[in-house]
Length: 620
Image 1: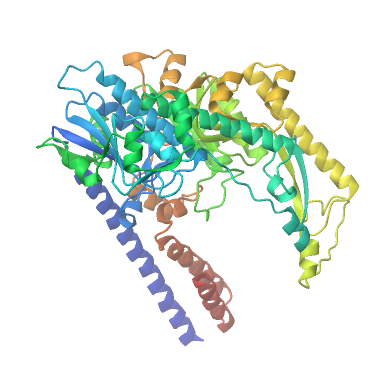
Image 2: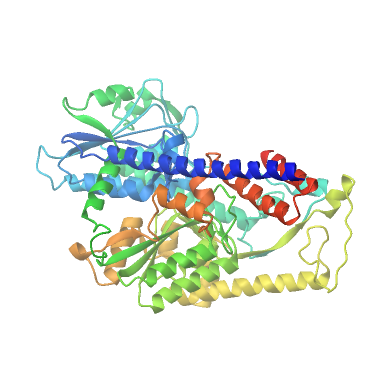
């Protein structure tokens, strides 16, 4: 027994040594990232052309701190891109902006591109007040706008620039908008899966692909209206950008793909050139600088203005920015999720941090969500109400989506700002389940169970509802819908009849939402920032800075939070995700926990085998 104990003891010494190595290595990697970024943020020379690469993904949230080590092109936060372009418009060091991009863009993500596009238009507008010889140019260069495919949204974005270039082999695919839907009802019936779903009401069609064989009349009406609004925005944007009338642009949309020369003849592009040739046209002595490096330079300048830890606390007025991206879930969410979530407990804590800070004068909430848990949405909304009770104005800025639960949260706002292409509304509820019992039987799996209480198995996926269970489910869903519409009535100051015409699960393009009273202004995050300043009485030169809440931790701070266990919001996943280190950390924790169990069990051989099984299971 003593020999076995010694072996286990040596195992744990090696384990904790491994943790120490990982800790030191993690801190060293963190310092490397910080120093690397600091080097990147050196002062920008004069006479530079900023390179906006739209092949780099844009995100609503800050990239993960270690992402730059493993990804040569980590995402850039869209807010940073907008701020950089706004600053560059009057920066004497900047001669212009050259944009390159490729790939297809989903029309449902058009709002994010619209926000950057509007910044380019604002950049151009600013140049009208600049003296001759100091005006900054904007060029867009692409290899193709859809290679025998849809390049509509990409070209719509490019049409905002002074000049548009495309290489000789490129194609310009103005295809319009199309949203195909697959319906699986027959398949589910064939394999024995039974949907039991209550939709409130006819326009709430998220489950229609699983419950219908094709478009219902309401589903078709809604999608036709939504896509029609987006199509009109595309046509109007291209017409204005290229100084063409809308009828001509609609005709061009119906031509299909065009060669580079055909696109030039149609006045959709200016010159047929390769991207390297476009860059060679930049004036001699001008340096092309990635926008990412320009952003780092601006951030470095801002940090120099901030008081250091040795100085007194920063007591300048500020406007808090709280970003909510992804599905809305209760509690702290799934720590293993690789995508963003709006976790009610985490988000409520962020809101409390903001309204308990005496320097915060208003809150801007950035929402990009298709919805989720009604209870979680209501909890977050309530916390925003408490912020208002504390005297803070609330402005919601909508991204690509602010639908269902996303709009539910937005009803707490004093003002709502959205892009014309934001998909919003969906004021409705879905309540139900999918019964898979018969499907399991077809493959030889049977189900049985013991229940005490008539509703104990009501949400079981193995058995259908009884009539009584279905009645209660229908009533609960209807109650949730009634509460939702009442919130909209009070928040938007609309009558019950008005809300009924706008709700029933219907989604709207942001342009229609504004016209119908579901939003207050068309614009982006910068516009919401200005509006928040206006509401708190601090405008113009007195406009407070827009600050992320909570303040983002640097890599060392995040790693320290992981190692100390102070990580209720799944810091482990956010810091180490995608590197493999997160799985190693979790494995070590499991081994250590198992080791404690071994110790308490008297170091038996069986417990030792348990440790090996844990390791094997985690390695699969």
